[in-house]
Length: 172
Image 1 (cartoon, one colour):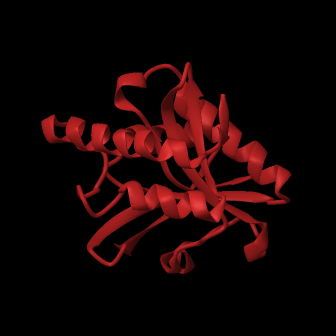
Image 2 (tube, one colour; image 1 turned 30 degrees about the vertical axis):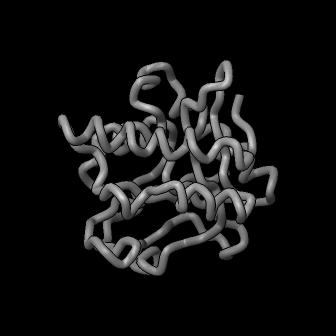
């Protein structure tokens, strides 16, 4: 089940972030995240307070989290998007995470499908997202789900790391 997060979910959300970082410490690395900077429990709390934080849950255990909102980072202006949309028509997927111990079960596909349905329900006409150029699983997943690669730009992410992010779009 995927649902809107509650305050009780914050600890498990932070556990997912930490599990991803622990896994990456052993390799391979698919994110450019930095422990203690991004993502953190505060990242989850901010999305929760904004009403844009969703969790995937099974038997009381969170298997994934995502922030679905309409916030397009300033660097999105450098991307040659091809699906025309006014700012209020754009849904943006941020920090979609699947707990590594739950990977390989189709949860990422479920979470993306949920985001598409929820964005459509909110009146959005397009989904946009970005992912680190080194995130091979995500860079394979999104095109397989009908997302169009729109371009790559250098982002100064969260004001602490410069990185190249691949951007994708899909009409709803």
